[in-house]
Amino acid sequence: MILTYRSALFLGTLIFCALLTACDKLAYPAGYSLSPDGAGGYGADKAVSAYYSGASSGSFTPSGDEYNTAGKYMLYVRDSSVKPGDSIDTLIGNFGEPGRVVSTEYDFELYVYNNTYTRLLLVAVKDNMIIGFYTDSEDFYYNGIAYGERLEKVNKALGKSYEVTDVLTYDDGKYSLRIFIDVPGGGTVTGIYLLGNTIKEDKYTDKVKRDAEQLLLDLTNSIRARHNLPLLSWSSSAALSSRKHSLDMAENSFFCHIGSDLTDPGLRLNASGISYEAAGENIIAGYDSVIYASHAWFNSPEHRKNILDERFCNIGIGFEYLQDSIYKTYITQAFYR
Image (cartoon, rainbow, N blue to C red; front, side):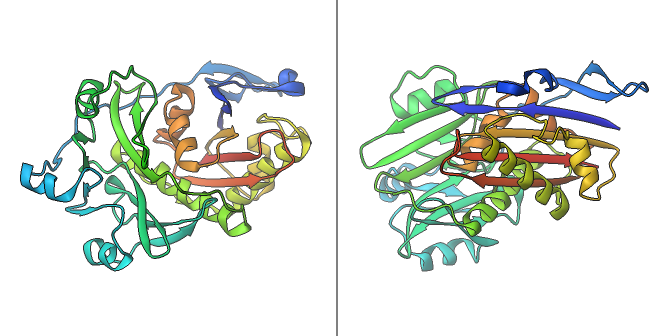
């Protein structure tokens, strides 16, 4: 058996770590693969991973007339287009019925187009009208920006002088645009997220939390599909185990792979009735959106290894929110085969 543990924390600025508070005597070092050493303990050997970096393929570039007619908020993707202000009827007419509609912690729903993971599209809808979108589709084109483009092209398109970082932010007063960059993979664009500036935070209901888990499954499988890796299947047992660990961290004010009962990720999987050949875990806290959490993991070389580990074929995700906890939101990803 092989276990790999990765931790991530966000609080104001992004900090990656393997331990916090009382966990310092129990946590395994991030970036290492841990396997039984035959003597009741664990011997550490460095984990290995590979990642893919490539330019966009098949990106659609509209003609000048098309662009001028569409306006600067038009997204070209999945052989069609979408823009804020369109109705649900227009959305479904262009893209068909979504794979599912999910609730969010904000005052809008997301229409999820996930039938092809290399062309993932999420469309934000409020009061039957489109107010934004997220995509990491390999064929998207937005305002001069396409999947796989380098920073120089982004700066030229927006008239800015950004430096390489994992998320670029552009706000024109009406809409906020987030441009996601694959820093470890060469500094190219991997996705965009556009939202109107009038959105409001809503409640973290049980449905919102469960929908967040499924959305993170889509985001994780999108990454794997774009790196030519097998998709992960949902494990309800691993999800239950992950939820328990996320809630444990929230309720007991710690952030660590070792639970308050001293169980590690492997023991938690075993307790859920799961036998495994290889397993891994990512944790993160303090993110109010799984879109940002997924991208933060992907931009951390150590967490990226679990996401891109070709050995894994199953995943369970646990999202918990506790208002009175230190970091409010806690997410656990459990991988195994």
